[in-house]
Structure formats: C-alpha cells, structure tokens
Length: 559
Image (cartoon, rainbow, N blue to C red; front, side, top):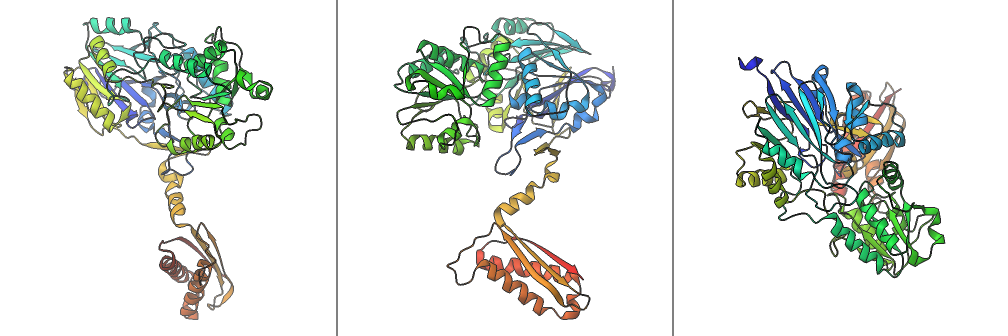
C-alpha cells in the first residue's frame, strides 16, 4: 500500500515536552491526509517575572483547530492544573466530549462554578479498567499512585500498535486515600506481544536516583510531629493532595485534636472528596470561625498557601492580617509541600515572618513532611521492565529531565528512544520516524478575562515600563507654531530624590522647554517634528541623569 494511504499512529506534543506544566498531547490515527485525533490533557502553567500581570499560560491549540472536524475527544489523566487547568478556556470551542473520572469531573464542575465560567463542556464518565472506544482508538484508564485522587495512565490501542501514556505517577506501595499503581495491569500489558508498544513517560524526577518516599512515611512523620507538639500545629499543603489531608486528619484524631480548615480551595476539594466517599472515618472539619474557641493544644490548622500566595491563609496569618486565626510563639507550622520553581522567595518570606515571631517552622529540609508524586530512576526502570516498550518517548519535563530520561532508557536496553519536543510529530507505527517542528505550537496568555497571544498581551510593554518608568508630555500648539497651552508632563515609576541639586522633574521640564525654544516657530507647527524632538530630548536628558532610558510618550495637540 502506498504510504499516503496506509494507516499510521502519530504523536504530537502541544505542551509539556520541553517545559514543566501546560501538558497537552494529540494522538492521530489513519492515513496522512485523513487522520482522527484524540487529545490527552489540557493544562496550564503559571506566569512568572517575565510575564507581568499574567497569571496563567495555556497551550496554543491552533493545530487542533486546523483539524477540528477530526478531533474526537479530550481525555484527562487527572485534575492537577498543569493537566486540566485550560479545559474550560480552550475546549468549549471544539464542542467535543471530555472523558474524566468522577473526581476529575467534580473538580472541573467546581472550577467552573467557583470562577463563574459561562462556557461548559460535555463530560463523560471514565472508569478505571473499563475500556471505551473513540473511532479507531480504544482507551483504558489504569490506576496510578500520584498526589491527587483518581490519577490514571492510559492504554491507547489501535490496529497497528499501542501506547501507554503514563500521566503523572509513582510506584508508591502504600499510598494514602487511594489504591497503588496497578503493577499487575502494566505487567500484563508488557506480556502481551500481539502488537508493539510505545511508552510516553513522566520525566519529572529522571535526574533523581533511587525510589520516591512513600506517602505513608510522610503520614508517620506528620503523626509524630502533631503528637509531640506542645501547642498549636498549622500545616499548609497542596489543597488537591487529599491523601495528605487524610494523613493530617488521622494524626489529629489520634492526638485528640480537632482539624480547623482555612482556605476556599481546601474546603472545596475536601468537600468533593467527602461527597465521593474518600473521607470515610474522618471527622468533619471545622471552619476557621471555630479556631479561637479551641485550646492551643487541641487544634490542628490545615490551610492554603504552600506556594507563598499573598492572599492565601498562611500568608495572611504570617502577616497577622487574618480575621480569625493567629499563631503565637511556641506554635508549630509544617510546610508539607515543596516550592514550585519560581515561588521559592515568597515561601521563604512567609517562613521568615513566622520564625521572627517565635513560631517553629518545619519544612522538607529538616523532616520528611512531603514526598513527590513522580517516579525516580529506579521506579522508571521498574516500569520499563513491566511494559517492555519497543519505543520510549520521554515527556513531562524540561530539556534536562527529558535528556536524562532518554539516556536512562537507552542504558536500560530500550531499542528506540525519541528526543521529542513541543511541535514535533512522531510517527510511532508502522515504523518510527521523527519530524521535528512539524506543527505550529505556542502559548496563549490569560490576561485578566482576556485570552490572547503573547504579542497581543502587551506584556513586552509592561516589562519596559517596569524597567524604565513612564514620562508623558503634553503640549498645545497653534497653526502659527506658538505654544498656547502647556507643556504639561507626568512621571510614573522614576526616582524622586529631593536632596539632589536638580530633580528628575526639573530635568524633564528643562529638556522640554529647551527643545521647544530651539525649534523655529514655523517648524513648531509640524506636530510630528515636535513630537520626535521632545521624545529624543527627554529620553537623552533623563538617561544622562538617571543612567536609564525611560519610556516617553509625547502628545502634541494642534489648535
């Protein structure tokens, strides 16, 4: 059969391969010009210092839009923001179903309600171990241990080959609040030699040797720290880590303490978990308005803010701005989390505020109070042995993680290892071929309520303003070149040092007046000439004084 008409299985990463976050992948099956597509995950990443004002960054779905008629569905592996956070912003336009487990579906519905999102998507139930068919694809969700309930790997079966898309996972033998990774199912998949297998595998911890600590080890340490605390214990963790919340609640009950919960995300997610029967045997959590009525030795506070968010509960408590909750010297605060890269400074600032007030702060640097939800190198090798893949494609990581994972796979004897990045197309079957940069990929910024491209966002201008401030000059000139009003000017974000012989304001005023006087009246009637001359003069004089070139806007009004 000619290549143009034969069936092929291709993989196209649209986000998350070459970066942490913003995970989105497409799988296509069929002849080159007539493929059907499924999409796995639709996540976000978070804006950083280079994107002032931008909270969320989403993958650009342009490639999927070009093939919208052939897109069958979106399948979600779990409900962490980097895997499902963009669904309600991007997926309604496709008018295709979303397959999710009960917990992920409930998280999606709660997200829509909390954020007052008008658009909606059709969600269909996905159950572990119950395969379903979408066109030429058969998809089976497989339970994996992770740091949020009902995380799944996907077995994607086609007539010419299979894919195991791991999602986020680890080989935790004793997870809290959910079953362990289904080793038996992975082993059975590897033992089935009826068709070849490609493994798309989490690379987050590919640089770390050994095996990730188990969640029950963290639970034991939290229990000991709560039991021997003389006064209050406050614990901040990821609100979505229901297993950790269960560990804290069990430890508190054992120590005869009540759990007070502070933070909307904590209440929302624990409410979902309780509705789905995940908190059986756990006493109801108290609201923050009951905190003051409890003795210091009888309370455990569970609160949001593990990433240093300024408006979250632990930050407001540290700044002594919380309306209901205060901590005193001798109380104990446990950061049962790790700081996502980029958040370290904010987290440390909160810890320092607490320490300065005599509060004992415990973090993962001095006790095992947190563990990752991702596999280390020994776990990766165990999965290779179970799946026995013909092809390995490292995903979910920055370049350093992907390359370390690729090297590990080759050293372990995997025959074909693909060094893919966002925008590549990888033909997995019938024969492996890698097409770098084959499809359009990029980012979209959620700027307030506006979804836009980076060029449309104005972020470049914000960066310039943050570095050089802004000077606005306004002057009215009549047809004879006479100044009839002004010049007026305003400055924002420039230094104002009163002790200097000449202030920046005086420098600007001198530059404006001097430039206007230097232009002959007949030429002053040309607004473009005056605009250009004033802009150059102000930038030059301020740069000589300040050492930086400001952003200058000039308005010349012709009267």
